[in-house]
Length: 420
Image (cartoon, rainbow, N blue to C red; front, side, top):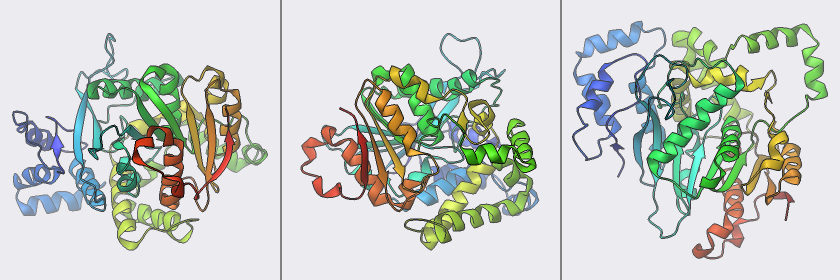
């Protein structure tokens, strides 16, 4: 059954009515669909007023729009799921500040979807999205992975349909803690232990930082095109930074100018920009399986609403990375401290260098491996979903032994490195 459980949703980016609609369900234990919540809000307004508000709004998005676009995108998924807003409180336990350095004591929520295959002994796989993305970007993967795992996907704090507190972090340590500690509160709220954590890009960086701080909770770590493992700037980047263009781009980066700001500035023309990007990145210039017309339309719509909403988690960029996405706290330096078995997965055309994963594995005192998936770029799970699924199943085969022989699935990727 698809539905919402939980008593409240993430805070609204533009309307307070959504909170009132959800609060009215607090006394009920029956899941309530996100569509019915949106309808309840809309019924409180006359049709002509709603149309005028939408027409006059410079940034045509809202919490309701995020929820509705997410639901439309996930309609492509055949496996039943439950969607809920998991409360993580107002701040870290024992801390005298809220999430993070905020004056608000408002409860915060992590948007969560769960696919439970009801297979006895199935391992739990938690999926964490990257920068400028949300959990819906894994829509091509849920059906296949849910056949083997209990799959849980989240929107990190400040992204997607999760709460979007004001981002007031002022250092790398605070920015990392924003994500790592809020994820740990989410884990405790879900009473999760011994699970597999998969993170993509920025999500891979955060997953790795979480594994360094809380290794006792993890069974396995899967890092997909992770940021943070390239230590030295390439010759190409050094050359760019010596030019006027590089100087300007670096200034913009250090001023925390994000791509999302461009989308918001364009107002009602923002959706067209996102639609064109999606059509090019996952269509004409895709190195793998292009999105079909329906997938492209639904993903573009979803991406726009999640990107144009209130800025929050996106503002971590300049604190965690320097220009060019080079980590200010490189993970390669922490590799000898690793305590969790780790698999790295890269597309063969990924702009993240797989050699950083190889070097990290060589420094680890725990088993590690590097896998490359052909006909795939940075979004390997969209470009070559079949190869990505095979790589994940190969990485986790020892936890899936009760599900029979899956050797036939392991021919869709390249094994680059495997430590003892």
